[in-house]
Image (tube, rainbow, N blue to C red; front, side):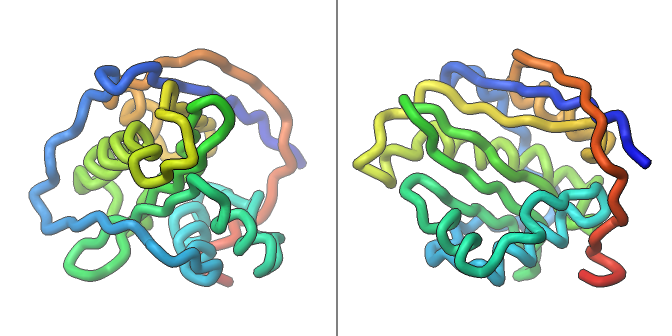
Length: 186
């Protein structure tokens, strides 16, 4: 069986495009994971994406995770509420000053509490100032991401409210895979 999946690509072309969200009413701290950790990144990936069918990285080996996370300009920013991981943003520098927000999302228990807009705003700001932390990279000229019809119901609205603009839409058939987690089999 297959699913019809619509994928939308969105971008910001200047730092002034970012329309930041207000801080949530809960105690949230956002910290960069300064040491690439395949175990931690896989935990975040499976926990955030398990109920919305994120599967593209589940088959990667430890070495493949390490290689991806160890590239120049790859950063993982994690939101914590009272010391508990709530969600994350993964950034990846691309050619010519382009930065992709590769993954972004919240663990299901933390959704619907205004953390997502705040975390996305923070992640987009870190995409725009990425070269300040990676001097070998050119200044950021464009930040982009994609979302799809499998993502959370508020994902597209959040991206648009943060100032991202739609630049491409694709509709494809994908295999319908079993939900990989976070429960069961997280």
